[in-house]
Length: 192
Ligand SMILES: Cc1cc2nc3c(=O)[nH]c(=O)nc-3n(C[C@H](O)[C@H](O)[C@H](O)COP(=O)(O)O)c2cc1C
Image 1: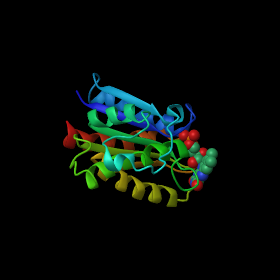
Image 2: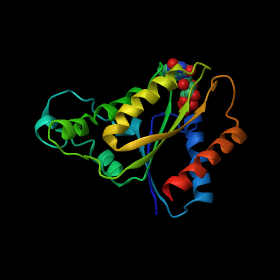
Image 3: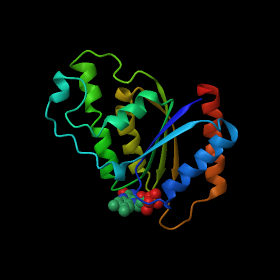
Image 4: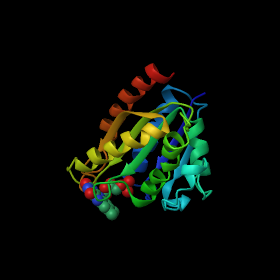
């Protein structure tokens, strides 16, 4: 049974990001593993405190704030990590960015405390991105951020699925379904 962790960066439960995520999870259920365990962490509900660079994690594993613990638990257990996010000002919405910044504790665990793998289990990484325009720069910037973050989260960014022009064109279920199908076939060979 594979475990999926979703970090959800959209505040809109009926938005395009949510539709993309539902499409992926429905196809996962249908084609891979109905008994899978999915944990969705809604970045807007976590109220994650931003990293204040206090240096605590440089000397002691973990963070002085305890609000990251559910994210850490999810990351330690997951086989598949899904980052589902809209593009906001060419980057991640602030609540999701706050979660990413808090992974600095893994960076310090590795490079200051010598803990080789602060996150033990390797994860297949999938990025679902929705954006209002046809400008691809936001996704390119966010992919770069993810590649950096994923190094300390012990994940590899294997795929990005995009939904552009969301402010003018509704999500095309057929196109996105076909794209998810392609991703699922790859996951099947690499993960299952
Ligand atoms: C604060 C804010 C900033 C945004 N910045 C961008 C942007 O830089 N580039 C872009 O293409 N769309 C931008 N958008 C549009 C959203 O990416 C788009 O509406 C997306 O579909 C929202 O995701 P959702 O439907 O899951 O809520 C922005 C929207 C908001 C609210």
